[in-house]
Length: 405
Ligand code: PLP
Image 1 (cartoon, rainbow, N blue to C red):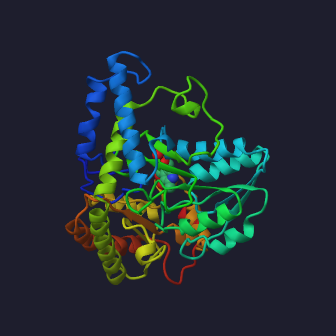
Image 2: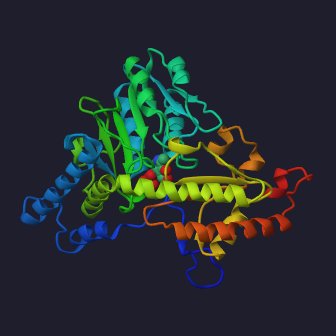
Image 3: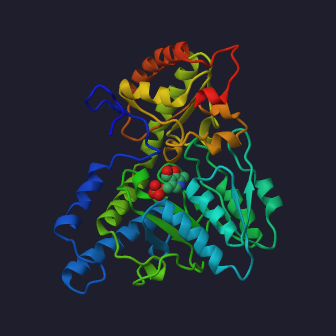
């Protein structure tokens, strides 16, 4: 439901594409027959079943091709969260005989962090690598943390909050030299950062359709040939026994098409989003006093991410005011927006608790325009000014977390 209080749908400008994206009409067109006419179960022997099976295998080809992988390497799942769980738990259990040490970073999505915390309760040792002020994991810190007992390293390809693109090529190389598996959560990176499994020493990679103009509730795990996993869902033995449950054919077809379009249109959409992002960052920092950018600048930042911090501002109020003016943004990652706890990512950059609250993430898609960015730039200054007039948080008045929430 829109937050707008004026009654009608107010969000005309959607800048929350890291939370989820609009389904591309070309993706929807390919999916529709699999709900209404070709609704067979891919395991059935009749022609309905064979149609469904054929569509699933074509989608697998498309996903594999987009990653420079073989179709056998692709396991369909229900989304990024399940792919992360299958990668981490599946590999941890399969390799428990070799060692029980896992390395990850403090800025991972909760799908990775909470899975690692669960694994700690099962007797695994997890090392959480710190990041620098821009959110980067250093290759040296990983090198220092790797031991003979390390079985797996999981570092995200790009951060969902501040857009930091990690040096996964180098991180994967040092991991492989130490004889461990390398997993990357590439949910935000796919279709924005080239990810070629022939060039990267990545063993496992998670992705999700709804972040790239595909449907919700479907994703995939890339699994390099020879990597052993123990399933975390048991049943009819679908997906090579690694992920039982009748396959979500319309969703899988949508994921395949979204991946195909994501790859064929990547250069053009990255260039477009980068230009809009640069314009937004430059003009917001120039026109709004006491505004700051979180995360890195330039090429090492996701093309669609602009993450600001405004002094003396309380994030939820800002989102509501923006919503009333027709702009959809977010205070942090969508998954943590409902929580009043400051984002673990911002905290790990060394920002004090109270400064994290005045943050705004704008995340673009290929459907956004420069004109929308200009409308936003015009609107944000007065909104911040008005909120500051009402805010108990002002220069000379010390922050008190209890007054914030
Ligand atoms: N990993 C990252 C980096 C994400 O941004 C998200 C979603 O926000 C997920 C995992 C979870 O993906 P899904 O919503 O498909 O479960």
